[in-house]
Image (cartoon, rainbow, N blue to C red; front, top):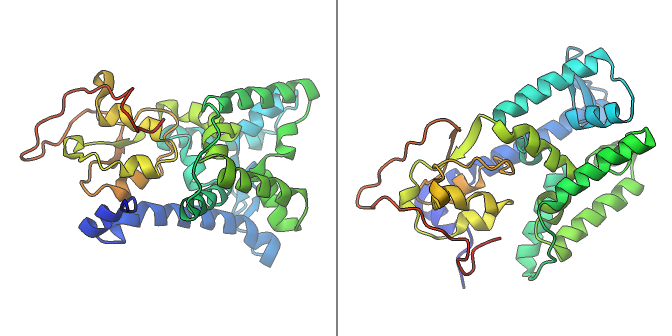
Length: 305
């Protein structure tokens, strides 16, 4: 029976270091969600609003740029405060990576990750095939819909928005949509919603295309091909070029759909991965391990797609 992904890292580093970024990410997701909920639930208004638009401590406005874009296409002019808030958010994700929103902020990711965890535990095999670029078609359709209808129509069914409404106002259509997302990821497709269909993730990947913070591979020559990083990554296609120097790719993951979740860092027993910046291409030599030449794994049997 194959070892659980990350087992080598737990043995080499200990349980906590092998789950550090996962625990920090969960703390961030749950903490941000609670900040929005303690107001309506307990009357403690640290943050007012939701992930579309919020006002923190009656001082800091934060606005979802995806919602602002839909508003502009729907010919609805946002207020000045909202425009100020969107500037802050865009600058932040240009620094840390757009899809960091998906792994560190989005509450629906908690649901889809749980579906994947359960899928693995139940041994559910097989998966429908939907191309990952489909999410960009979904994004385009939501923007066209806003322009045609003159409304932010997508936000009526956006699982993120509906999750907030469901937690505050109770059961209803919101939970139906969230259940559908959960069942889709559990029974139909591995990482189906976040990795293949979600237009929110597609939008944030475009914002973070030139982001500064990246996952680097300073010791990629130490890779022992255990494949644990591929097993835990929600976007495994982003790892291969940097790990195997395909086409001379430097030791840094520059692909826009990397979520900067840090799981590859956690589960690697050889400390191949680390957070850093997109600048510089230094590789740390590993004693006794020759530097790997560029290898083309496009047709490697069994490699993730």
